[in-house]
Amino acid sequence: MYVNKKPVIGCLGLAVLALALVLAVVPVERVSAQDQKTPTCESCHAGAARDWARSKMAGAMNCSTCHGSEHNKAENARLVRTPTPATCQKCHSKQVEQFASGKHALGWRALEVVPNFAKLPAPVAQSGCIGCHQVGYIWADGSQGKCDSCHTRHSFSAAEANEPEACGTCHAGDHPQYDIWSNSKHGKLYQMTRDSSRAPKCQTCHMQGGDHKAITAWGFLGMRGEEPDPEWRKIRGTTETILKLIGPGNAPGVTRQTYAEWQAERQKMLDTCAGCHATSFAKRALERGDAVIKESDKVFGQIGMLTLKLRNERAIDDKTQSAILREALAYRFSAYMGTFHGAYRYAWDEGYLPLTDALVRLGERTGKLTNQR
Ligand code: HEC
Ligand code: HEC
Ligand code: HEC
Ligand code: HEC
Ligand code: HEC
Ligand code: HEC
Ligand code: HEC
Ligand code: HEC
Image 1 (tube, protein in one colour):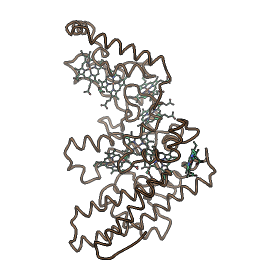
Image 2: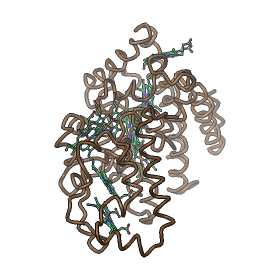
Image 3: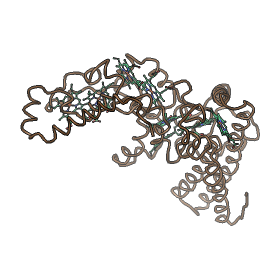
Image 4: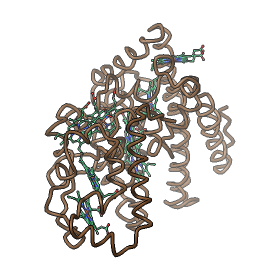
């Protein structure tokens, strides 16, 4: 839990709360009469005002800096201005520019490449995909991102955004890095000590020095534009074809296009590990991750070929094929995400083990008993 180290702000919060309680028992007519005389943002939006009072920015500006002053009563709410990263850029150009050059800023455009996204019922898309991918929302003024994804409004705290929980809402599901990290030695140690000089949290490795450009070497899909290993190149084709077929393989910036780009991100990561470990130790750990992607590609490739065979024999339809592939893909993800983050359970029990099981089941279906384990 993030502990607010500023008792002053805590007291202010309590004072506002006490005021809200007093107002709550005052007869309704008196409140509205008062509001008509001096209608302020705070009197109508007590929740936002309470959180804003906790913000370090509160002394330097007011509500109108971000929302404009055109809207000042209930009847003209449509005149309110919604701040975008262009608003924040006036005072925080460094963070806005770093963010725009990173992976989060591509989150909105990524949705367009998944064929099924457009077919979803709107409320489902809103409560699912959009909830997470709005981190890269593209505004009418062309600016990208929702800064309150991590700096929740209206406290806009750097300390809160700097805790691993801030990443937990979205790095879940078929990319469960929050649970994975929580199950690693790093995660457990951090949870015991809350001390990032003892054990690393997400931000230590992915926002080094407060850099808002979050990006990794392999990316979500474990692919790279140039594959120097000739043996791997041969088996990789199947994985790539399948990922493009399902959609994510076409997402903007999904792979580092050149080996040099991949290497640059890898080096940045190694430098971070070197803050606590011997470089040789960390290098071995990361190379184990690379090797697990390769081993998983071998199994995933065979699953892909078998589903094609079954599909051609009309033993399964498109929907079944895609369901089998999506399940196998999730195990493939888990195997290397678990390895890179040092969570043995995700690497094995939720990763390589069920991946090989899926192959065995498919083999039985085609009449050819395969045992890869
Ligand atoms: C007399 C009451 C009143 C005052 C004063 C007032 N508002 Fe509002 N505001 C409303 C109402 C009513 C809405 C419509 C949404 C709702 O029902 O809560 C609204 C809507 C908004 C919204 C959009 C909420 C959404 O749906 O996304 C924002 C932002 C906002 N107000 C900010 C402000 C700011 C900043 C000020 C001061 C400059 C201000 N308001 C002054 C009553 C008020
Ligand atoms: C630093 C910029 C900033 C300041 C200053 C600011 N807000 Fe906001 N506010 C935002 C952002 C960002 C959002 C989310 C907009 C979105 O993406 O829909 C927001 C949303 C809102 C909403 C609608 C969402 C909700 O949670 O109810 C209200 C109401 C609101 N602000 C009121 C206020 C009031 C009142 C103040 C002053 C006490 C204030 N804001 C000051 C940035 C700001
Ligand atoms: C008019 C200038 C201005 C604008 C616009 C502005 N900020 Fe700030 N911001 C400040 C100042 C001043 C501080 C306080 C610096 C300090 O005291 O350390 C600050 C601090 C912050 C911090 C660090 C708070 C902490 O806990 O250390 C965050 C995060 C932040 N702003 C986010 C935003 C976001 C997001 C937006 C846009 C929605 C925004 N700011 C818009 C001036 C601005
Ligand atoms: C509101 C949801 C949301 C939150 C909160 C969030 N992320 Fe993300 N993150 C995403 C999405 C969506 C993507 C993929 C963007 C795309 O489509 O390119 C992503 C991508 C990333 C990547 C890039 C991986 C790659 O492909 O190379 C890293 C690293 C990352 N996030 C780290 C973090 C960290 C660390 C935090 C917490 C400080 C965090 N994220 C908080 C939604 C979120
Ligand atoms: C729980 C939050 C969450 C939900 C819900 C979600 N995503 Fe994502 N999505 C992410 C995160 C986080 C990443 C990046 C994962 C990583 O790098 O390991 C991502 C990655 C992607 C990518 C690949 C982008 C890239 O370059 O890495 C695509 C495409 C995508 N999501 C589409 C969708 C679609 C379409 C939906 C809804 C059907 C959806 N997502 C639902 C959080 C979410
Ligand atoms: C993925 C989560 C995430 C998102 C999204 C995000 N930030 Fe941050 N931000 C952080 C973290 C973590 C820190 C603390 C970094 C540190 O202290 O090392 C931070 C710190 C800051 C600070 C304080 C810097 C300082 O040196 O005091 C500002 C200002 C800021 N962010 C602005 C923004 C703006 C503007 C946006 C939107 C373009 C944004 N942030 C989006 C995670 C995020
Ligand atoms: C000790 C450093 C470290 C910590 C702590 C850490 N990661 Fe990672 N993360 C890595 C490494 C290493 C990779 C693989 C990098 C590569 O592609 O070579 C990675 C990859 C990722 C990716 C890309 C897809 C994948 O999983 O392979 C995302 C997204 C991500 N991490 C998010 C997070 C989040 C969210 C947290 C916190 C809950 C976190 N990480 C904690 C080191 C770390
Ligand atoms: C802030 C310090 C810190 C950083 C940065 C850090 N680690 Fe660690 N790591 C630790 C500590 C402490 C342990 C627990 C050591 C033990 O098990 O006795 C640990 C454990 C490990 C383990 C498990 C070792 C075992 O014996 O089971 C691996 C693997 C590992 N780290 C790899 C990495 C990699 C790779 C990176 C960079 C991506 C990294 N670490 C970054 C502090 C750190």
